[in-house]
Length: 287
Image (cartoon, rainbow, N blue to C red; front, side, top):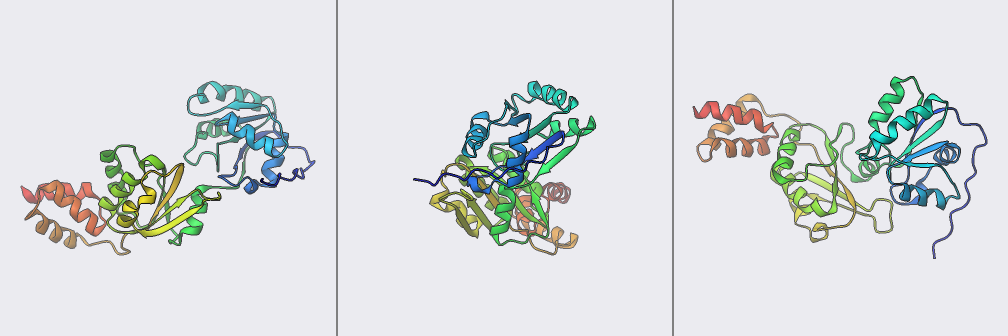
């Protein structure tokens, strides 16, 4: 039986009015910060992506709060209420189901409108699957591009990956378990066999971090249909971009065997260059 969580030592100082963007644990409840507990305990209104999930979090720490649903379906209805409360000097907290709000979660319109109306917007930092994945992946972090969730369909997903292929940065994606294997296969087709890392169940009992080439990860049976959401990190392409002459020579050779679209895709994967530009050049060369 799990040990009960200790009661929080709350800060008795009054909480100033404003919108508080509060990070919550991504798995392990002990990752909550003391400052987050202070805000959630004192807030006049807590906007939650799922009130049931947030209710369980509050209950675990012996807290109670007025909860309002704030997700992509309820946002248009709830946002005016929250802005009206802020206008009256209320302390409003925004949380998502897990992690830091606005990181592939709803909330940016509320933050923008609250700031535009002159209300204070106060970040309460804490857990984030994005940062947790980066910290454990072992990939360079001096340049990082967070791309969120890839499109659900393969054709659109590959187009999205092709737009990112030439970027010299570690790429970070969120992905659902039901689409992970297909997404990894599309990554391997577009990015080639770059080094990658899949993070599953971060901070939870069955936390798993697997490193390897994209092709091997795509074929790994443990990623066929895992549960939950995962973080996928992909190493940047080669450090030095291919010259125009290199690209032209590669296209000419590829066009001797392939149609323009296939030739452009092959060269894009090989040289880490944008496929669309290569496709336009391939059509010109073919003509």
